[in-house]
Length: 191
Image (cartoon, rainbow, N blue to C red; front, side):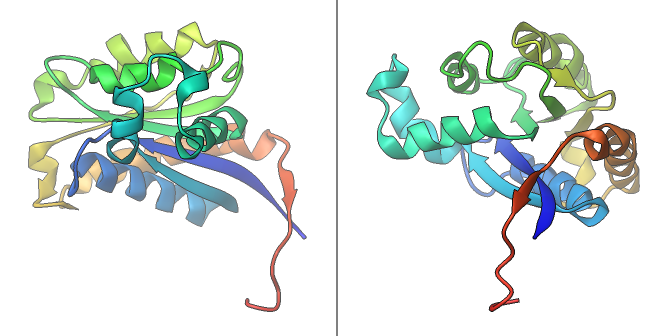
């Protein structure tokens, strides 16, 4: 039996391919190398049909409800959104509107965002942090912002972005390693 934190990564991109998804995967990979994690990825684009036509959580299909429960029961979250007109999308906000008010209290959250230019870099400070402050979540000290110039197609090509991800992970690790982890049964028959 090994101790692992349950990490849920939320990519707020609405389509594939997605630079936001690439950024989330890079952050999760860096965290997974640094410590044992049980990772689950949630893509907003896959939830969009269910969320877009649902005003109340009790009317969500079971598959979407399971995704919300995963967010609420995670030990740590990585949350990233593309920037649309200076903020996250309405559907991204709607996803978190359906999360229980007390579900994220003291939960560590590493914030990230992608945008067309550096002009949107403050979205993490002015949009994402206040959203998660409402939940009394523990937003981690270093967020990660990436603009289109940090990518070659849908691959990260910027050394500075890789350094920013490494710094975010380095600053997150002391807090994450101090959190109690749930025991996870390891399947040794298939290892």
